[in-house]
Length: 91
Length: 203
Image (tube, rainbow over all chains, first blue to last red; front, side, top):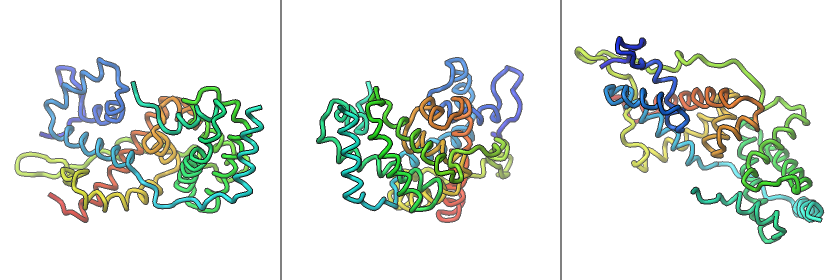
């Protein structure tokens, strides 16, 4: 099984076209028709499934990213200034 | 229905005059704004300064936040304006797009079949040791992304803003956000892939 660059004679999407749509597929931002086309293609294309899985895991890792650097605590005077600004905006 | 995020719940309480939400709100947004700016510009002092000034502007105009659901895009939009006013190298500025073809996976011949030349991702994210190792490199990988991709990835995948909210913060169309997000994820994926190939070994 290899990646295809052109749409096949039956009008199905090529791997190259699928490749361009994978993030929108993961984010459920594709139209139902396009989503259907993509699903039909990947049912039959192990390399695309494998690539999609690795992309899905990339997104999950980014969502779980934990910052290694933290800001220094706010100076007390600034905290007071923030609180005063909040209280003023509420009047 | 999605559960309300902590940021939204805190903003709602502050808008209704509940002062007890203040400390946690400040702590949460200082961290978020600092992390975003630090990842974008790589300078700790700049990130501290932009986060603090953004917080001040947020509270000075807190009555303008009419919908608590929009607190995150609102905060990041203010941060963008703070950056512009400082006339620093904009962390939202446009750059040239990378071609999708440059991000396509490669193949290798395997008998009579061609296989994808990618690492073994099967142990991610369940294998704690590999996940920990990848996490360490992930922050570096994201920091090294071109700015136009990094800003979209940080807002969409790390901060989990919607496509529309991200478009609004960055002043671009939703289609541009989708295009850039895909390239950003592919760039990150490819770098993690390389890392896995080197550390875990090719299949």
